[in-house]
View 1 (cartoon, rainbow, N blue to C red):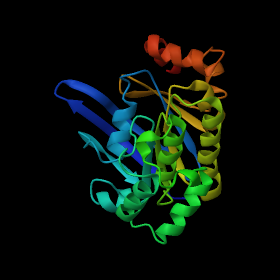
View 2: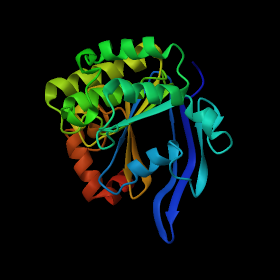
View 3: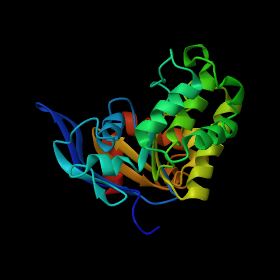
View 4: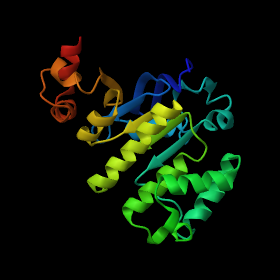
Length: 250
């Protein structure tokens, strides 16, 4: 349990002269939920894509469960999984078919039993033979999270997993993610624009601005440290006046 679920060191991503991510370093501990926050264009999704191996960093290193992603990509990613509202599963496959194919790719042991347990956990048993393309947004979100937990990941990466969901479904999904962290000791990196959700579920937050980590701390106490009344007010300040916050931090 002492091994970091994720260790990012000096991560940079450049596109020609444009710097999307600029020297980002942070850890995610086992059992910890870390919020990755910032306005559009701050670099959140770029960071997640580099951790997933979708993008190659210009410089820097990513370690998942102590495994260097650049040296042993397959071994590192065995320990990780991902869910996002904007990345739906293939709509022409049924719920079971999607989970079965992905479970084979991940090499999940006792796959039929694992799928059965996840369908029950996410209240999807009645949709086992339903094509994903006709599921509601809430049902698709539950399926994406079930898919993300197929391989019992030690690191779960989330990009707006509850976007566009009604409050009841979003609450259930947050509870499932919290259970994964607390009961199974998985680390979670959660990118979100929903500050109320972040304050409710995250143990620690990182605020990105212009590709750099500007602020870090407990989401419940960090706003007051910077003279703000709420996490949402702090988010707006990061988006509009990051230089003033940087000076205050120094």
